[in-house]
Length: 254
Image (cartoon, rainbow, N blue to C red; front, side, top):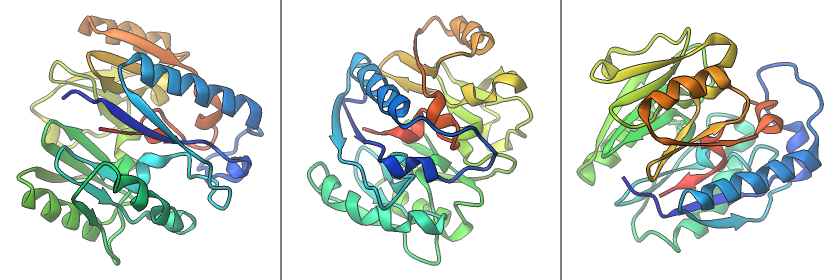
């Protein structure tokens, strides 16, 4: 599937207070801004026209814009983040999406859903059940997708923040899978490329227009990806990784 557009949101100074599942060194805001610039440049290099939204200082994690919407060829779905501190982020994305989509759907309480748990492969969407995405949210997404002739498949997920923290699609019927992740049976039709445990953040890559965007600094994973004979583009997002951020969550691509 060819992506032509992306939406990103600049990180605000409040990002230093972003949610994190691990103890980390202090995030360098200036370095994060520079890395965000490089990320935008990488998206553009991969052929996307990037819309850059202003930061939302009231929401430290708002630069991880992927979590507030799921974009499909036929409609946009505004999610319901499972993290209480992120629920207000959805209000700001609806007006933006109206400039791109006629049909906009929503996930409603008691459902929760974050875009980081949704892995799209063609017109099939795998929905990871996690601490941030519950069965109600997943079922709502399945029903919305069905209305537009697409398929939603809930899958169990544990041990990682989001489904796409552990597994992403890299083309040629292949999944990039973090070592230690128990791959659900729903993925049995795919070939797998394992990411070594020491490099598990590299499991979160983006396939865009015959290129693979991957986080910088993971040579073993890069070597394994080279077997796909696809151009690999590296970008440093080490500051965002300090608060559980990955490549996919920094943009909405469509």
